[in-house]
Length: 286
Ligand code: SAM
Image (tube, rainbow, N blue to C red; front, top):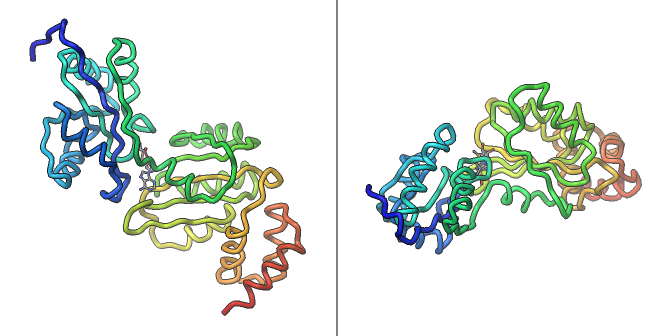
């Protein structure tokens, strides 16, 4: 394609797409995907399925992590030729633990307009249903693959007053929760599995409680986001979580009510008498 250097540049639209449920796409995203000249996609086959669901057909160019720099040059050439380009990843918001930042930075450098088309992200989806009332969170993306690096990262954030949020694979989620317990001590944690999908699951409890529930499964499948609450004393678990936790201890721990109250109060640095009152209601239920 020849490039007219004098042409008004096109716009790069950074478009969020669903993280599972295809209904989770905005009207604006659908309109933009229908209007642009070209779509830069992390995986063109994956995006073709989404486009077909939306009854759209567009030229696609692949834009993936290992070739970000090279593909960005191509996309910049298209934009400079006056073509509008939408950037999408396989799921969620581009450039959030996904390719995208390189081409966006180049656009800023070349004064090419960039327009965000916000929408789903596994990060915000998980935080929104974690039930932890902290005003801030630290997003760690994927934790390092090497154990010693992971321990270093977790140790560096162990005293944070913000929530810690990270993405995790089904293969490693139990190991990571065990490492969290080892490094940070007992805490409340929220684990979102397969969010917005058919097998969506919201797991909430202590590290050891959630770990036990996951380890009891024959197989661990799906996509995971982990949200870790700050150390006990910095936050108090909201009442509904305590209710869930007590219910879980009643049904699965094999502990008596008294011992469950003792364990939870110790783990979370809570008052035993207040917990005892809640526990009486939980144990009274059939
Ligand atoms: N850019 C994406 C976003 O905004 O959510 C994230 C891309 S990152 C490569 C993919 C990771 O996000 C998965 O490995 C998983 O940890 C998390 N994730 C994506 N979709 C998810 C879902 N439906 N439920 C839980 N976690 C999900």
